[in-house]
Length: 575
Ligand code: SF4
Image 1: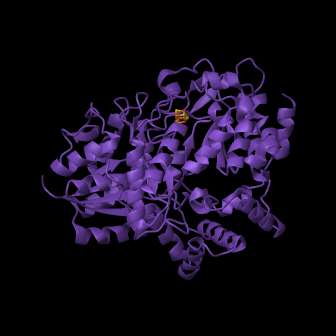
Image 2: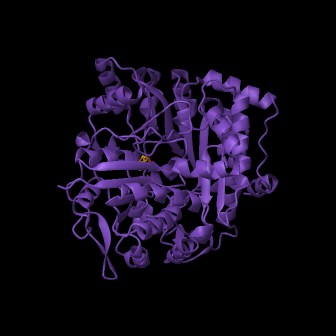
């Protein structure tokens, strides 16, 4: 096997607070085979580049504040406001770009307004010199002059980095025609299949392969052969026809994955390094609305898991390499059993680690002792999908382990154990009477003390979710024709409300406004916007966060109300 020079890029825009899991793992896989791999964290470098052009000294001061553990919450708030103002001043030529609260927002104007996404991408590539990240990408090309890579891989996971990724791919191909340009990441399995493949043909003038499956095997095979023709899980251009090679029939074992390799020359926006850890492929559940694990080679099948002993070994190895003790477990769900087993393995190694993770809200969390055991194992924060207050809705979404009557007690147990809680809520699930969603504000007021952060979103018909694939809600919603929107992860749809005399869509929008207003009134809204993600606030206790929240509020920090909130209240009062 030839030793190759490979660059793996996670392009803007992504979360500057997080290190990329995918390319760190792929780097380890390729390095194990003897390849020379350089990672580029464009989601951090690119955003910093833009803000540095705006005000170099200002950005350096803000980054110093963000990365210090010694500064006050007021100083952090000033840094946050600087970022919001600086990003708002950036010339975007019609695109949307903002660094706000816990998010870096980027929306390509072409993807927002066009009904032909590939044409929008081609236009963006053609007009690249005007693009927000063009100067940063030019700087990236300079690096290629010295590296002369055999393969350049670009990871795409959402709509917010697909257009920048395509522009970069074109620039790399034009600058280095001999380099194999490969796109991968969780985005492609959700948009690229036999029904859409030919629409992607024009992109193959710059792209040699798109990996639409788990990247472990395809990337290794591509590095070896530099030819996509026989590589599993890969789309390639066969003289104007896009061919999709099937995924591997023997998915990669998770216990054989190497320890991820991180590029420590780029720092995430936090006082300390908190690496992500990925221990299982695919969630074994199949909630109707969810396509999170569609990229997995065992999607809607059996989960493949790393044994707890291996997870503990990997954490210890990362500690020895980087001195880290906190980990961001990015598995779709990290069960109570897995966590307790991990805690026991860590004890055996004499290593004390803490983590945050996604967890299903099962009734075993009604047991206070179980929550205390989770904390003792090392769990410090959980992200829970509450989704709905209606058992009937949860039943229809194939999420029967959620018991809404127990949410309050479980949240209380977790807080008493010292575990931070993030909750996901969905407004507008098909078939759910709007009164259920309208109850969330009251729930949040009553039980918000035991909730740290809230993500409330409207229902989306997500491509490759069971509902989208099997049309299980078609009696309740109608998917709209969107043949050209192949770079969108969600499908357009309308509620079937004929004859009801009310617009369900408008009711959903009103309920969403009410829930958003309740989020803004929540005690931790400002403090968690100023200390975004567990990465930056994981060392604080609930009580310390409450104190910081009071400091911010008494200093006059106020969140504006949702516009038209009175209209929303009026509308739902008539339901
Ligand atoms: S919502 Fe959560 S539990 Fe349900 S399928 Fe998705 S990841 Fe799994």
